Length: 609
Ligand code: M6R
Image (cartoon, rainbow, N blue to C red; front, side):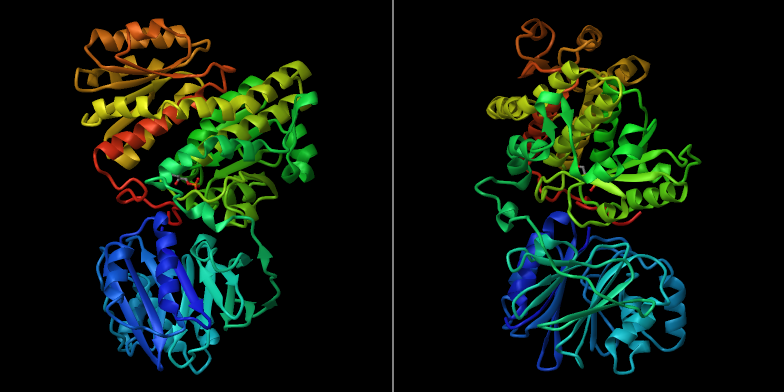
């Protein structure tokens, strides 16, 4: 969603802010802006549209100021326009502010401020903060920000600067991420580290209710309640070059091709071949209560991470006796659930910042569950809310459409199922078979990637269809949902995923020669049934693209086109299969000329409800 970058240091701030905004583009946005303090005045440039447009406009000026803030806005209150773009200001433009999150009581605050003579120039909820700070300001910016925040309800990650304090940035967070990068004679504030990784890898993760005051050399943190806190800078592992395209036309394609390595990183040091076992250092502290003794597991997540959870349910059911429920976080948080002390709740999230997942976790915590996490972004909100957990170690995922982290989630969840299974009834030989299957996955994915040109040719043939159906059974059902989601996210083609057995209960009404179906028909115990569904589609003139197991020559008699994936254990087969679906979605979007890495209306991390 919205992206934040702030800079204070010894270099001109503008190029650093613009580069930071470029690095944040992947989060999704529809307008952008910066403000820099120069000679005790503010230079502010904002506009709807891309950062490149903003950069071109700024290139007409020679801003030399060494303190500034920049923002990419994903519209919530008010359409994308110059007036609604951040930074927002008070009346005399001495205060500039950028904000992620939502000020829920902005309307009542706005009425109060209007009554006191304040004039609003935008439709945003953010602007109210600039006036509140103005109203509270008596010479101390931190105090003014604190007082203003004391009046708001909602979520925020914000950075403020004031022309009377040209050597200070003030930032605060509640429910929206904010990190401080500590450089040499310079400091950076951002909504995620990728905005400044090229300048420093020393990071302080701010906690909810922290307020930080930053100068070029130093920072102090205290809380809304007025307590001074000590937070140390930690080095982070991610390499800045992980955010470069390295010759690929899009991050999505780069990340699809990275998947063999992503799996290697996910399983490295976590599989014990001789014991047919998995081990996660991050779960050691909860092994007894969480992994050995657990009887009831509830998985909560959203979007693609939810589909990883659905896949995990089948795998847990195969390898363990656990009762597993999978919940969409935004639904679970409002339901009466059977979560109670003894329930293990596992939150899955690439970003670790998804607002619905965070809220559902709070509900689960209230009900006494043991909270675990499977998260990619180190230090993110979800990773810090859980009692224990596992990192994907997948590096930054920049493409808005999640690919490599979905694959990583599926592998790690299968390993978690193996761990629980081996503590219970699963035999060492069965465990060894699973370990072996997981270790061969990078090679299996390599083989699917070699089919990229073939998949491209199939995509080119079908890319002008307006509708698609994706079907699969058992382990392949979540992949059918994921395949449909990938296609609609980046190509804007309407696509539906359904359990193959459900097709005859309604979906089949849509099938005709213009409505192709992607059938996940890898070899498992449900293969024959899926083939029957394919026959039903064929009888209604539907065109079929089959994802099938290598060696299945008969499938070509029913399907119009076939993409083969390597044979492996039945429950691991969907993993290479979904790689074929990612490539299919990618090439369909390319054929349609879509903006693949920044699809319209979508955000990488969804930090609002
Ligand atoms: O960061 P999270 O895994 O919590 O994100 C959940 C969803 O917002 C995310 O998977 C979304 O559906 C992606 N755009 C899928 O490609």
